Length: 144
Image (cartoon, rainbow, N blue to C red; front, top):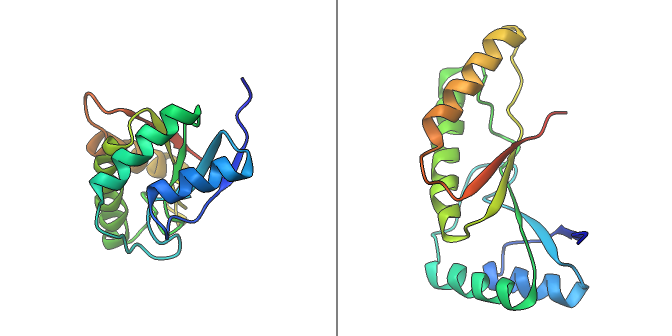
């Protein structure tokens, strides 16, 4: 089956996104895991996540695409930027365990003139740190 959806605002919570997708006739949707231009994140609402999971199952919606903020740069030349990206991604992936079986899309970042080989090493190292055995989310790398 073809899955068609759109990017929805998460400001109203998880279940609200599911209901909006259904009202639009979508059978999937994307959302940002946190502020797309910053990194702030709302506290995890487990009840809301559970309600969305039940709603998705009952309405044949999904899988979903959780999109990481654009501010992540796993291969930055500044260590504090790499640490921020790695820590935030780790938190995102832990939170997505409440929405199992979906996708996590992120932009790996810019090598900042360090060279693509160095960037690939940093990205791979970070992914090895944040991904874990038994994880229920598929990680997608989106390049530009």
